Image 1 (cartoon, rainbow, N blue to C red):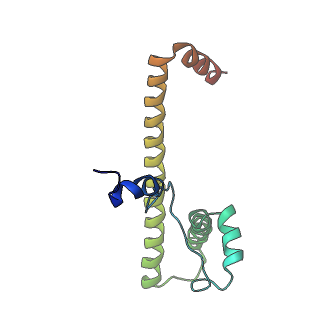
Image 2: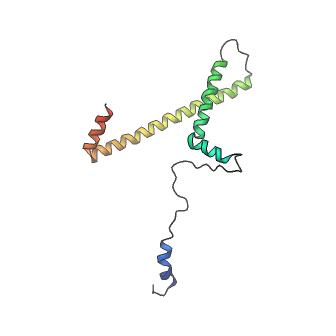
Image 3: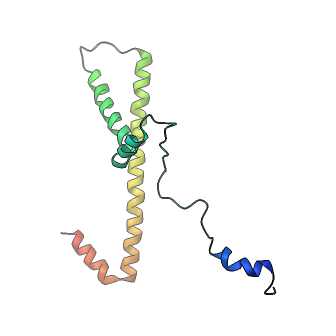
Length: 135
């Protein structure tokens, strides 16, 4: 390519314009706007402290307690339709708990692999770490 070719002239400028279109993120991104919330600033602050998952988990735990207490003798009978709805909620809670356990198992698998790598590459640091874990 000759020095007067347009690509030669713009090449240094173009190479500095490198920006990923979809940068990698490690969590879900929630866009809280005035179109989907009456108070996006408040909702954003709440989400910064307690995720939707934590909020829903707390509600499910509380509703589960109410469902279990409803089974006590002397309570008014629950309709068959309502019982099915409650059973679906309890089934969902069990699935969520199973997913949490799977996540723990996966995380521990990654930790185990990291420990084995550390043991192979830096035995001194590995031994110190293992010693501190036994305290």
